[in-house]
Image (cartoon, rainbow, N blue to C red; front, side, top):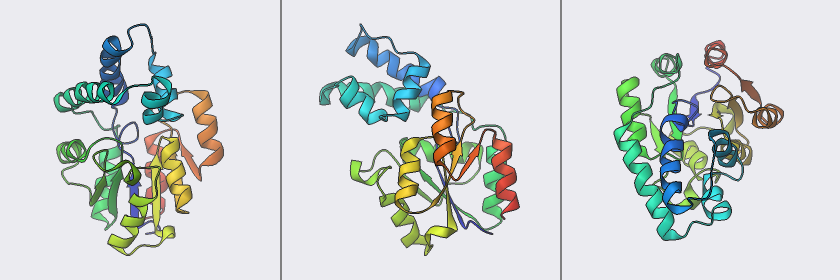
Length: 219
């Protein structure tokens, strides 16, 4: 097995969450916090890509701490009431990989509670390690902390891991740790994002089946 550990993003990489959960919850908050601003789904995805969700809230929309807490409360309500579907074929792949002895770690801006729920419901197991939004900001991606901790916990070197993510933040984290990075390109069709990820990633997969075949070839 070339990669002993898969480091997986959750939203829009493993599960279909932005169109049905993150975007509508954000729009509901925006109606109260910034009623004059209209944000399309593509706008939201682009901002989450660059400067990132935190940058969108703090730098673009200038949310105060109180406003950020209001947005967070609405998001938590949406997440609690809705469990997103995994992309077709993704659970089968990671269950097969896990059965072969692989390590599954999740590094996400969703919270561990929801990630455990989604994996238990759709995959029948919990990831070996999760780094979620509930961590302090310096411990979340794109900071190197999650990968460093994974290496320590499982006694791995950087060549034994593969990061899969649809976001620029995941790419930055992987690059900072010299870990190979695979871009998940199946969640949207925005040319600017695709071009950037194709140019800067080690691998780019436009379909889950492409990634599945790649992992099977390296097992």
